[in-house]
Image (cartoon, rainbow, N blue to C red; front, side, top):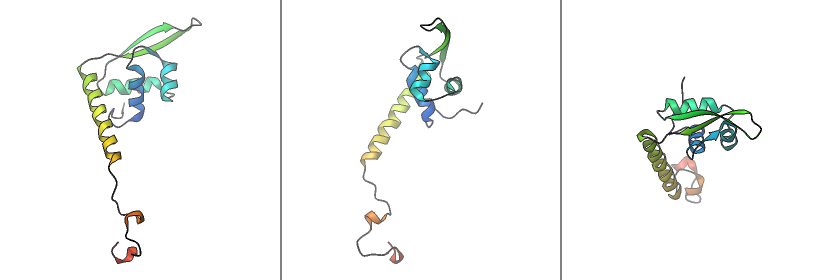
Length: 116
C-alpha cells in the first residue's frame, strides 16, 4: 500500500482527529471526515506508524459495527507534536503580509515591461 504522509494528508489528519478522543464507529468517522473509505484511512494511519485498535461492537439497532481508537504511545505523541507545530507555523505564515510580484504591489503607472 502507498499511504500518504500524516504530515501532508488532510484526509489522514481528519481521521486521526476523529479517533483521538476514544472509540469511534466507521459511520462516525465517515461523517466527521467525509471519507467513504475509512478502512483505507485507518490503514494509512497504521502505515505512518500509529497504533490503532479495532473492535466489533453493536449499534442501537443491534447491528454489528466496527470501531476504532488511537492508542497513545510515543509515536502518537510525536505525530501530534509535529502536527501542532505545523499548524502554528501556518498560522504565523498567514499573519505575515505577502510581498510578491503582483499588480497590487507594483508602483502606480509603471508597466510590467519596464522591469516591474
